[in-house]
Length: 297
Image (cartoon, rainbow, N blue to C red; front, top):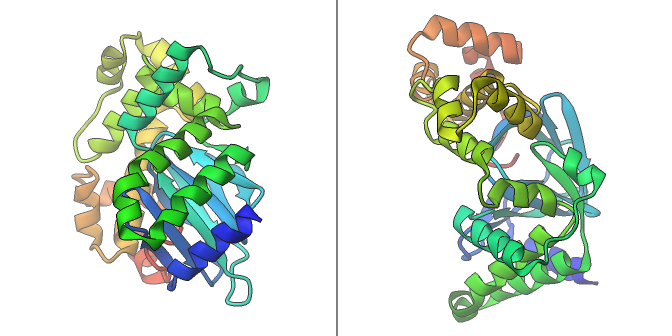
């Protein structure tokens, strides 16, 4: 019954396709009423929970399809492809997107470590890379419901919103995706910090040697640990981040040249070659073909 109530709350607020703000910082709800093929996107640290329909995410060739039985946890910025393969006006997709605030998640992860209450890692959780599908356990479901119930009252959101969101983030750290999330936000995670640095510096050159030095590792060790965490080599990851960001900007109306410069390409011809190699279309063709409402994926 809790999921039915969550769906009712989301449907009452998500009146149009795309993302809708709830009034609680970092919490959005969304709706999709048309099938959207997987398109390039960049997921910032977040949890995406579906209460009706299904979504699809592809990371480095690995396909994840999830619905109301699982939520997706992405604790680090990731270049993905995402879509809504079965959404229609008759069977709309409804869900919530929860941003994972680094400050709050780090504090919670460290509190759990100090309290000695960190759940034991399983073999499956240790194999998780980049993103993780997690089952809707009771703690997550009840915390999400309690959070969304606040959106009926401005005063409730102002007074209780931060505490209820913290409760939900704690439930995520305790759940199936907890090991991956704690690895990303726990003390001493040099790879997560490297990814955050790449994500916030797409418009300037970033060398692997510099990243390795920042992480306090040799180049070889950094390369190995980075690939373990993301499935991709650092160079491949940076290129995917730049091109996915550019594709999103072009789909949102930015010109090809502006998008290329915005993600660090100084050579338009190099940008066009690499874009076409990754997506099978030139940037201009890509922009002309996009009919996806910005923010839906």
